[in-house]
Length: 310
Image (cartoon, one colour):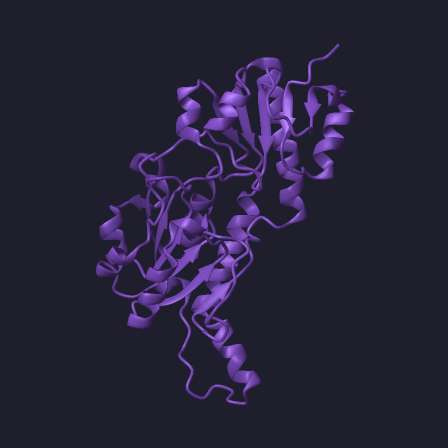
């Protein structure tokens, strides 16, 4: 009899279970709400569940946690290391959709789409509106130069923008041929007129954009399609009021769903409801990558995508 060694905590797309059934591996999986089990060696989850040290005690033979998706702020990664548990994600699944979503927000901001739309609806046409920017006007600081961040940087560079990045895990030589080089965070804040966050959320990046950052910024647009806790919303609002933040494109909030209060008519803020990965293609890639990550670990002892922390 096959041991049910894998606990799936959150609902997975149908295509994931299709892959499981096609391979004849359904008997390895359990969806039960288990309080304790010595059989469980792998946990699969998405964003709904939160993994804490209590899980490591409840499942004493747990060897691996697979986060179906890229973010892992709902997993206590540091404690997992203490228990010898591998934590993996599926970093490729959302790259295209998150990159495209960021581009969409950026263009909407620098072309003033929200303000111009309201100008037409209020019969003002072009009266009193500011001129737009072109991509070649941009100095873009990308905070987190992984899959999404580097895709964004290369794309904007190809259109004539200047691009720098902050990422302690990426060596300068790796990107030198692209004409994109690293810069310190503080120096980058003063240099950029666009700041786009693509780093993971954990203790060191929580509140990475805060009021202190406003001391370095001249004038810039802020983009966050990563995790809500990275950008402090109070600091963002203060920056807009001071005129240092020209506009913000925000897809994620620290507490979701987020209730909008006072931002409804602000032409400088464009918000989307955490839809950076909300495409059918991303859902399919997530399902396939999660299954492949699970299969590699169970049958080949391969850790496909180990989590790295800045």
